[in-house]
Image (cartoon, rainbow, N blue to C red; front, side):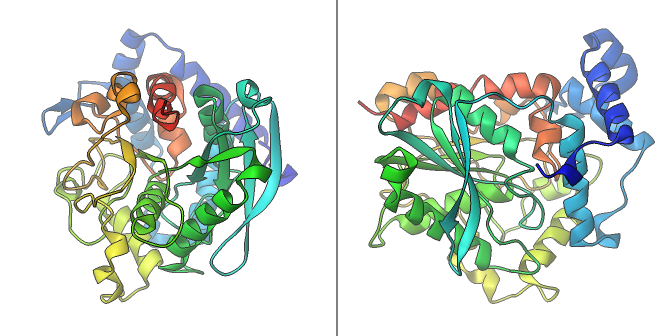
Length: 364
């Protein structure tokens, strides 16, 4: 990260407090969190309840009163607080990939155990942030972690953001970046037959749409897609937008605000009929295997979970990575994936599943 992104005194104090709270025993956390919260037949994760209680004491301004620049700075701040020490890898290299309208910033992560490999699996990663916030710096730690735990190289892509570049610019960038990564597989140290796509939240939407668009077109298609609480339908209103509309960090008004930035103030009614906005639609023939990690306490949850169908050799090991509501055990999410996925016990719960999931990239 740039020097301006380094934590100041206030950030360091907040970091220390967050780590101290995360290290508390469960009984102490329960005293902070209060009575268990249950919704839709599930109990909210204890660490998540602690976070919600802290949010109540220091509430964030509504996104409707803020600007895209504010949202981006909020994400950068959260990253500074929770990211922790960088995960060590064999090498990390700044590069670019071709977007739909020109070069895009990218970063290649090479894990220790694939440094000597001539050609291995590659994951093209699209960051979350509601198509508005985030970049390759805010998601540096998740990509390091993904590379380290999976053994695959990871190529993080800085696609164009809304509202400066509204739909379909981010979608077009995602597809162009994937195709460029396959075309440059030798340079990236990747097997062109084992290039996958992955992403969290809005980035999960871009990964899923890239996989669907690639089918039937004259070009390469992903070998696999790893979707972390993806936005998979921007057309229908999911039931979870009512069930979890308020009180779980990412609210329905927040989702509405992000979509306004993505489509424009008028909602772009014509754009909403675009098939690229419904990546949760029935899986078409030839679409690659999917592992989707869903969240139950989430205003962006899709009406129907994505199916998971993995390579037979990987099926048993990747079974725990399916999009299973009970597997998520009520963890919510927000505009900062690091804050909710890569901190405390939530990080330990999720990252154990990553190596299993990416076995599907290595078919016999």
